Length: 431
Image (cartoon, rainbow, N blue to C red; front, side, top):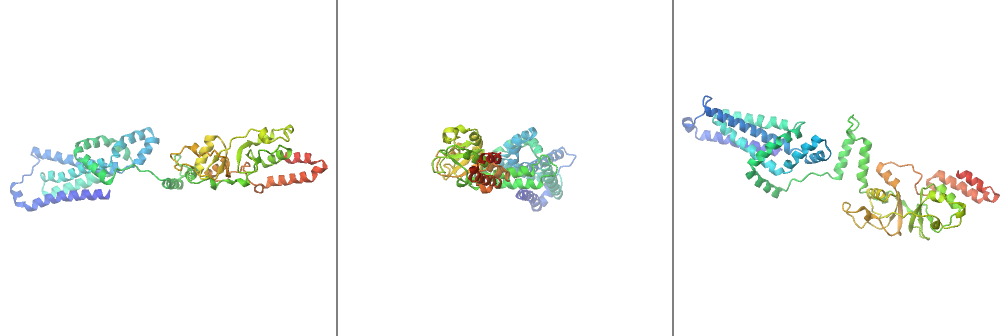
């Protein structure tokens, strides 16, 4: 905007120079031949009306140059999508005009230049040269610049701009033959004025600014917890699941061919997991599914000695590439209605997040499993704190209470089973 004011100053000084220069060069001729209109002449009031109209035109063009061109188009788009009904109406009227940036700029500047150039010439017909220049300077600076700019950039900037749009369109229609080719030239040379879009880092910075100002009594503001959640969600888009997964070697699993027994039942009860991965053969990274712990505990003594694969129906495993992001993982859990996923050592086939179908992340092969991740792990990353959940697959040394129970159960199994009291002690320990 500083260049705009400089341009207007140059235009005004140029017009003033023309008037003064003409007066200096042909001063004697003016004294003899130039006729100034007096208030008793009807033409005086006609020229005065011209001067008044030019002052209004200068004020209109200058004020709207400041008011309309300083409106943030992104802010208008936001109001059009999520504002009140009044804000949506204002945005709907303003956007089509403001989006044609160079056409609007050309129209207002040409109109302002015409008013600034013509006003001193008109006043020259009504008053002495020095007085005409003084009056035109006062009108252009005060009435044509300061007052309208302050008015159109105030608190009601959008509403005032909306009310000015019909008059701007009239001016555009009048100057269209001049300003439209000029705007096309500017678009070609400088490029079209594109809509502003924030990058992820800019949005996160904006959220941090809001977080610094929250808690001051404005119920419409986001709270600090909401800020943290939004920031974590944006961070999850670039964080891969390998950061929050568990090594498959440390995950408690059972063999599909393992036979059901009381020891296996007790071991599963001690672990306390709601779902248990099942692998095939001797290869632990060949996952064939998961089973519900409650389904195993419902089995009776009549099922002892039979393979688990013949007793229970397993759920198909969810297998994903190792470079899946945390946000993609959350979407997959929601889409597949599952809470456990296995990570293989392959990468994604499609890297473009915006064009990728979320189902393309699912890997069909059940081999080369390297890690496991649960829905709780995703929530912990999203909420940025650890959830105390007993259903976390890991090693016994991570859970002192479970380790203690398991050690006591081993003692019972090895020593007191021989005394005939093992069954009673087991039930008491596991109850």
